[in-house]
Image (cartoon, rainbow, N blue to C red; front, side, top):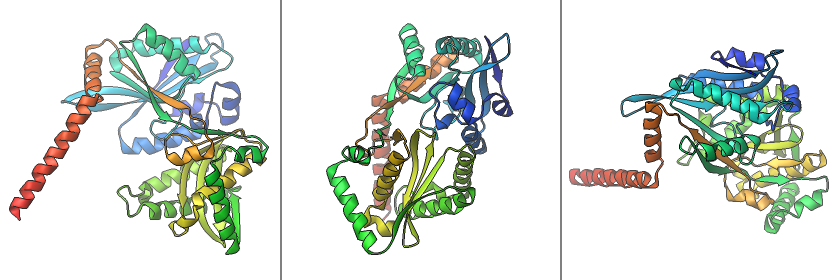
Length: 387
């Protein structure tokens, strides 16, 4: 095998297969490994901060066939006046599942071993690798877990976000039995009330022309929903809307978009922007009309989405990252992501490891909370004296 490092983003499109081939020929692929999704992420993130591609390609020597791709990037962070180079997978923060892209035809362990050897050969170029959102018990987690026991001092593993999912089948009634009984009663009652006031329909986007108006409605509803809270919608910002709209269009072009909505008397009351690979639906972004809050239109939309997914032969609805209590009402099963942090034996990496451990320790977090609280109290006291 031959391992090559690419530092131009255009290289990724040349070596990463299109979705159909990617899904068929590579291991445990999700929609978050689609080339259009990753490119959209890059365009978005590279406008926010200075990042550089660090794309690892693993080839067969005899025919130059690409059998593995690990799309990473690096950026620099400053701590105590020192600059540290951090490697992360492309898609970080906005993607729910981040794994290397490895051919099914070759040993995953051998490909990963070759790639890691290459990464550690260039250890003078990086101080830390932070790789989050690896599905627990995936081939990548299993491989790294083996190395964790061999090189405990250099690799750290931590269980992270829960990612609940619902198993479907074509027997809709059997799936409904998994739901919380109170939830089903509430959903059906509110559905009847809305239907008494007029029409209520579940719709799904099927043409490219529908995407923009439905996404614009999602942005509008999302902004209204979070307007009077401490966490206003990010879609107030033009660049956030543009990124999300482009992502939806790119997903549609790869046949991966699942954009649905609930409409009552010609008024859209809830929108769900999800992703699909034909077998799974990955819930990603929801918005609902606050004027219809008492009708739980978000639950109504999800109920209809699940029923329709059963009829269409889907196997799973993935609720993706987050421990929100409502997810458990739908009869979901919990799975988890894990986060890994890698260090090397260079002086800077060892130093960063110490800083990283201190920063993430419970004692440090408690100290910072007390420090901030004391500062606020002191500021409040000064203000009162001034009055």
